[in-house]
Image (cartoon, one colour):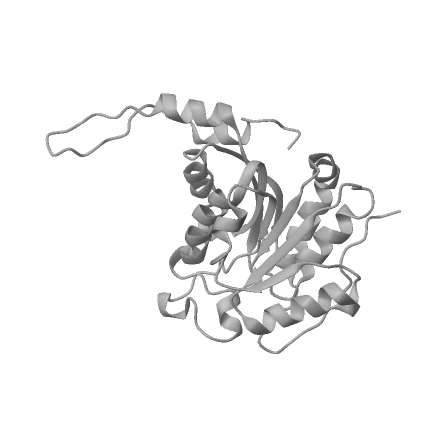
Length: 255
């Protein structure tokens, strides 16, 4: 029997809330492809940042399902109060439960959840737009990402780093225009291995679902490759050759 995911017929909606679309489906398909690893991972806390309609957090709860006897606590956040209502309704219609919080990324939750979240899923606003559209009111805030589509992504990643447990995994939707390789390199400096677990091209965009996880070898390697040379003005410089493609190979391939 195929694992369950959220059903479109049971989804709640609102004119100011982003409905499930290609990016939502791609993220859930990536979670489905990684389902056996997720079950073995035995997450205690799962979180979605920017839950929108609730399609992804509901699908995550359903696909882990009863096969994961340990159970997990689910949390979802969104800055849009309408999305909070819609997500709660979507969860309820599927017989699922999560704590749904109206907040910006994880504001007010960071201390409580520090280094304790085992799975974070994010479908951020990633579309390149004029900077003034970022964080605007209305549904456009769900996709407006500013220059290169990175404004919100670059705010989310440090927060996710503070929330993820030692065994934490982050699943992130990106667009080719967001420069996924650069994102992986930035996370590598913080000790994360990464791999693209799903790529999908539509008529309008090329999507990459990236999975990040903490890896002590990557952190050690990054530290060894960085040599800090004090200059006359006290500034630091970074040196040492690095092949960016190594990030796809490093780390435990069972994650």
